[in-house]
Length: 70
Image (tube, rainbow, N blue to C red; front, side, top):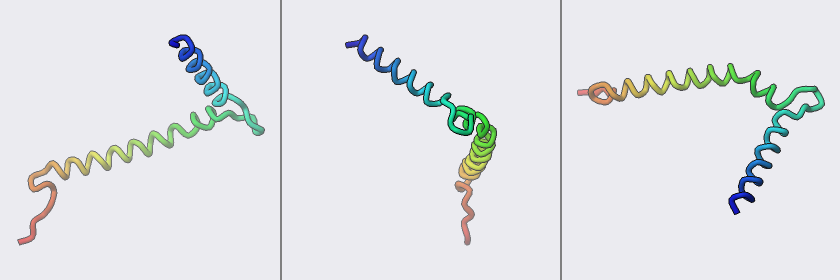
């Protein structure tokens, strides 16, 4: 049973790699598109992380970052 599972997983990985590197009508593969957009995604992730870090810092301040009105 283990060998059958190993063969199935190997075939699925092989098919996935083939799908990613297969060229379309424009001569580009899905992998080409992903690598071209990786820098944009990294910048978005960096901005998101900075925003969340600021929120955590604000929440960690005394009074939880909330101002109490008297």
